Amino acid sequence: MSCKVSVIVPVFNSELYLNRCFESVQGQTLTDIEIIFVDDGSTDKSADILKELVKADNRVKFVTQSNKGTGAARNAGIRLARGKYIAFMDSDDTAHNEMLNSLFNKATFENDIVVCGHQEIKLNQTIKKHSFAVNYNAKEYFSDIVSLDKPSAVWAKIYHRDLFLNPKCLFSETTRNNEDNATLLKLLYFSKSVTFITDTFYNWFRIEGSKSQSINTLRITESINVMGWRKTFLTENGVIENYEQAFLKSVLRTIKVRFHNIHKFTAGSESNRLLNHLYQTLYQSQLINEKTLKVIKLNIPSEYWNLLYSALEHSIKIDVDSFLNLFPKADVDIAKSNSELGIDARIVSLVKSIDKVGELDLYIYGVGETWSKLEKFIPSTFCIKGFIDKKFEKSAKKKPNELTLKEAISVMHNSSVIVIASFSQIEQITEQILLVARHLNRTPNVIRFFDSESSLEESDNGW
Image 1 (cartoon, rainbow, N blue to C red):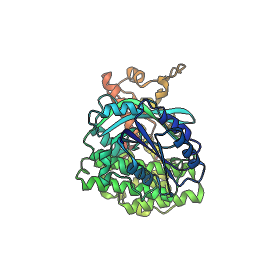
Image 2 (cartoon, helix red, strand yellow; image 1 turned 135 degrees about the vertical axis):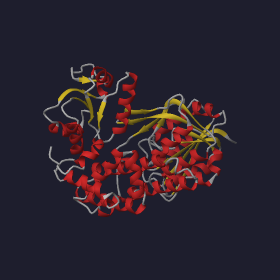
Image 3 (cartoon, rainbow, N blue to C red; image 1 turned 45 degrees about the vertical axis):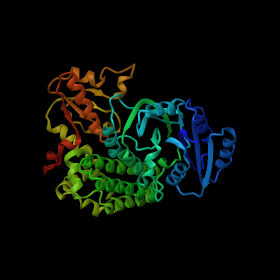
Image 4 (tube, one colour; image 1 turned 90 degrees about the vertical axis):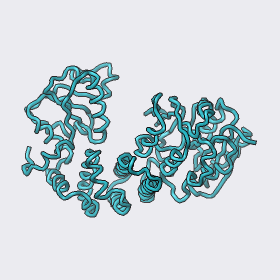
């Protein structure tokens, strides 16, 4: 006997969260469902809890296997599923009780995949909501998944079961990390139609100690390997040229996340060992090479210089010569000459950009770590008229020089300059500035660190 939706939940040592996850599925307003728990060799009390859940609800199925990884567990669930549509959940997450009903009702219009929004929750507090605009479409979503601009997770969706008749759409059973990144891209590509609902119905709990909160050599290797598989898939299906820039963004994003995790979760010799492994794996993968670096420099210059400066910084502790040799010697020399000043080379670049424009009024966009490093080097001839930050939009007690972007652009003179004091969100902030400026019919001068490329080639690196 079939049902409308099969919900597949892989389980590994989830005793603390299983009941919470189960209750959120059991309480769905769409009742014609089955709930398939696949225990992937848990060593805690998860199996005992699941046996009790089978007794509590006759829609629950429980199977167990030796520890093979999330991909193998999901495939096992797919083989058992009887639903017209299939949904995936992680065992430490929950869903709003209307999620399956809303997704299924949308799917009745013969959509292969229906996607809803989700929210990230950390320490029981929502930290970020991810939702879709009314006019968002499948083509945009595919590009955003290629670039990883949107989370490449298989949950918060339902899939027509026939998609999984294609063996290419099954999950990899040879990797333990980033299996969603390897699979969702294929499901979207082979689907006939993808549609969206704007509600944020899925709750993604960011739990300390989970896979996303750790780092090791296997995680590094497999994350790079998955990027290679994605490139191969796009190439074999003849669409790599259409998504080349988006794909390179995903590679750069993966590298940045791994850098962040190494610095956050390790120190000393262990940190150096993992950094060395990351550079070696990346170099051997050829995801970053002379050709791709030219594309990155042309289209995403901030990321190009960030990558080069990071490699130079790490070269003090580990051997990254092979990786650095991929960059043009002139660019390496530029970055080295600034790095020798003993200061973050990006700060040097940004200061030189500011100094280049002459004596002007400045508006600083960003009041975080980058500004704290930059502040002491601002030329004394400049006047800082105000600070811009998103948080000021919700502040009830702003200081006179604390402005929203709209307020700043409204009062700026033609000779004023907005300095973006950020390295990680340059493109996003620039887009925000241009959007608001167009709305106000203004054309502000904007300074970003990588715009100083020509001035960095000067022989005099003094300030």
